[in-house]
Image 1 (cartoon, rainbow, N blue to C red):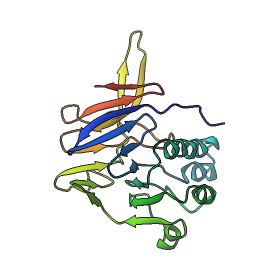
Image 2 (image 1 turned 90 degrees about the vertical axis):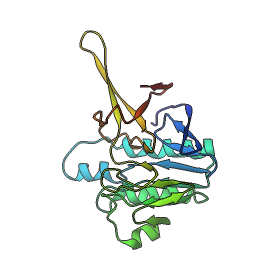
Image 3 (image 1 turned 45 degrees about the horizontal axis):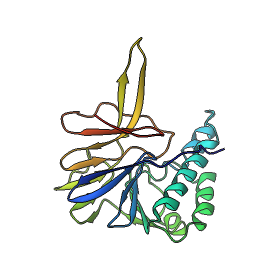
Image 4 (image 1 turned 180 degrees about the horizontal axis):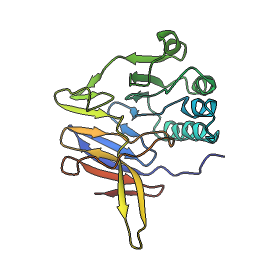
Length: 220
């Protein structure tokens, strides 16, 4: 059963554009009418299950339901995935995604390939996913997968690093939250899939962190 989530929005200005952060790990660009997300890792759960690691079957279904909520909420013309849309070998999750996508055929998918996106071109074509090998540029923003390995001039939106923050409380309690990391020129998206770790080691002098929960945003 999918989680019953509300979409919370937080608007920021970046690269001269008004961008909408959401607590469902996606960014919306109103002027482009596009959702931008990273690191869906379709196929990851099934890949681990094949290797004897007990991963719940609900993870991928939850990710798709979350994406469907965002589509219904924003009604985007396109979805830009800044890398790692897929994870491993062609498996049953790919077919699930294909079946799901036929119900959302009005939305164009554009993928900037990440380090896990290693399928043959024929598979992407069959899924009707447009491929960009390294980058996509729009209005002074360059969409890339990994800021650390593919540096470009100007402003970037990227993924790969799975940003999060680590909060300490009393009695040795702590919590990790996913976040958007935003600097003067770089915006790093949180991982879209819930089946990912969090990286709390990004430089706090270079970025502001917009962490989120099911109910709101917190700036650090």
